[in-house]
Image 1 (cartoon, one colour):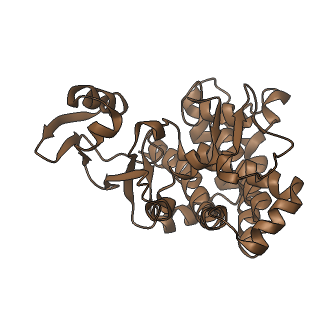
Image 2 (cartoon, helix red, strand yellow):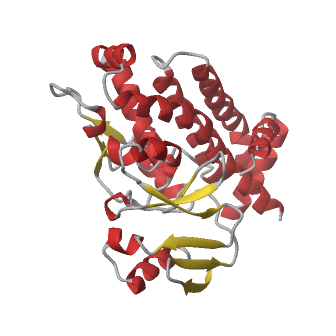
Length: 321
């Protein structure tokens, strides 16, 4: 991902003329004969989704951690809606799609620990709808999940887990490479034979041209480099490295955008409705929750606008080719 290109593309879309032209290109793929009409009808809303989303992020970066979860969560929902409007000209088709699509326990237990807290996926709402239409998954592969399991899949947070001797992700390649390298030690952590592990990988890498093995690793040779979001891989934006879950328990074939959404939803709820816990966390920093949340908020503020901007940019590049 070229950060400068994505930021420039966001700027490019901030006029009615360019927003309408972009949407018309996207809608032509639908082939319903309404691409021009729908693009004119949606271009202003599309611009506002982008503008409001990016403004929430920029405003949040200037504030303390106290208010960041709410601003980043609503910034993310606006950018998600912009992406959906680029693919779904009649979005939202019903009011059920306007709900968040996730829930959390309303009353927190005594001795509450963020890492052990869970969120539950709902059948309808923005999250399952976006997962279906943006990331092409009919169903999120879990119904509820702990915060620790979500944080462990964000590459920028891996060093914090490494200090606890929990290498949750393994580096397997680089954005520009046509070869992915999987250490043979993964066969032990996944409890799979070499053949079964390779078959699992190939189901997510259909354009594999060859598979080679040496004494240390399995190499997947690709027709072309993979780009985010490519389930079940995760990208680190500062060095463009590609990461894969180290342990079978962390193998969650889902977009990293979904992971950030779930974490931000829960943090935004805590900052709004659990003022006592949230205030103590920020004031006393008494356990591992604080450095993980602090690093996550710093990471998500930069990463999600880039990932969702790349989705839009990639559609434009495809349409122009």
